[in-house]
Amino acid sequence: MTKAPHGLSRNAANYGDREFAFYLRRSFAASMGYSRAMLEKPVVGIADTASDYNNCHRNVPEMIEAVKRGVLAAGALPLAFPTVSLCEPSLTPTSMHYRNLMALDTEAMLSAQPMDAAVLIGGCDKTVPAQLMAAASADVPSVMLVTGPMLAQRFEGERLAACTDCRRYWARYRAGDVSAERIGEIEGKLATSAGTCGVMGTASTMACIAAALGFMPLMAASAPAVHSDRLRMAEEAGTLAVRLITHPVKPSQLITEKSVENALRVLLALGGSTNALIHLTAIAGRAGVKIDLKRLDALSEETPVLVDLKPTGEGYMEDFHAAGGMVALLRELKDLLHLDCIDLYGQTLGEQIEAGTPFVDRTYIRARNQPVSPVGGLVSLFGSLAPEGAILKRSAATPALFETEARCIVFDGLADLAARIDDDALDVTPQDILILKNAGPLTPAGMPEAGYLPIPKKLARAGVKDMVRMSDCRMSGTAFGTIVLHITPEAAAGGPLALVETGDRVRLSVRERRLDLLVEEAELARRRAAWTPPAAPKRGWDKLVHEQVLQATEGVDLAFLRPEGV
Image (tube, rainbow, N blue to C red):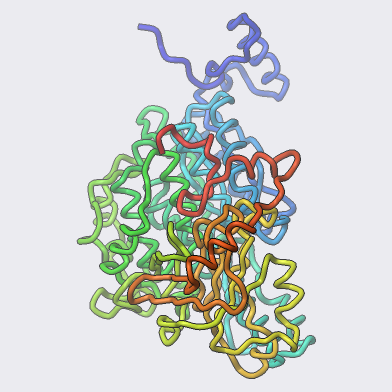
């Protein structure tokens, strides 16, 4: 029986002479100092997302070295390779615009290069979903290794970490409660260690979801970036990748309808990021699994918020880890989970929970009978303004605003928002609804985290902390407020949001799960006849995105990258 090709004997370059291709490959690899014995070993590829532009990934080089230790000790050859690296503050128009580019790059390298298994190192919030999307499409056995959250900094009697505290202080600065000197001082205290945002933002939510799907050990989701545990987990990731060569568990075995539902339960119980819903939808879609917003809403009614972290609570990710992390959280949710789902070790979720340490700190991970909230953090909304759905993070919102019918103030894109939001002449009251349109995935804005519309400065100065805000874009997982997001179809696609004008009345009902534009159909028909779609980009990645990008309810993936029929 012919032995299946492995390591550098996989994926020959196409010269029309397969043996010559491998001869040439070994010759060039030897120039890097490898012995023939090393070149004959199975290969673990390591996706290197280090970048001088990416603060979340500044610990990647030492993690790669730890992964290599694990790979070598287990008898394989580790080969690191660079991919696109995404960092939210470092990209224009937004890192979301390039998530699918990173997924495409990573998928191509996983598929084209000779490797038997892979370790994917990521952290910053669009990076982890891009890598999981790539793994799902390439279906190469892959271990997810996150960079881990930063530590909170103690400063003058309080703890600070990006980015909920960034937004809290910025709101106080806009309101005139914090001076320019003070905001400058705080700027240097918000992110003081390696790692991703230290709260339950998108990066941490995605790490927990990756663990729930089985792509890494449960406690690896929350270990801080600067802890020695993080390096030991990196070494374990290398060892696990080698095990996958002889005991393969492919992404297609991990991403199933049951595991995706488990991940949705985790998202809800964490009070996690709204962005994670888009990313999980994209990851699941690559594996042919659809997420139904109405099913999400049903799960939300059954799944309590149990984790008390910012932005919806008080703690930080280091507290969640020390409190028992994912093991403790999943133990509380056991009766709601599909416990037969497997991880990369082939263990069931039930076995993983049982094997974990039984400790839990109730300060940060609540018991089911004493939840942070008896219902999940997210709700789905449908109605004449959002025929295909919208999302509200009720765990970060103001309950008194859940039933609101009011006049709306409309901003026609980011430039209009920037130009008028702080104008003292703006006709706005705390009871109005702020609406931003033309900021969805089809627009040059690239669906930014602009849904957290600032409170108009004149209202902020008067003490207004929250008001209803709506848009077809996203908000940071570290943000808070009564904010309706991902209105679908978006304005640029000709959805009803495109027709909304200042002065129209809009009704939000969380109780009824409704979002309605209260304008006569005849008037809407007149506006629809006058509407024209925005101009398409002329070249490059922007043009490809405009031609292929899907709506929020389909994960904002590119249509041609999804399996047929999904």
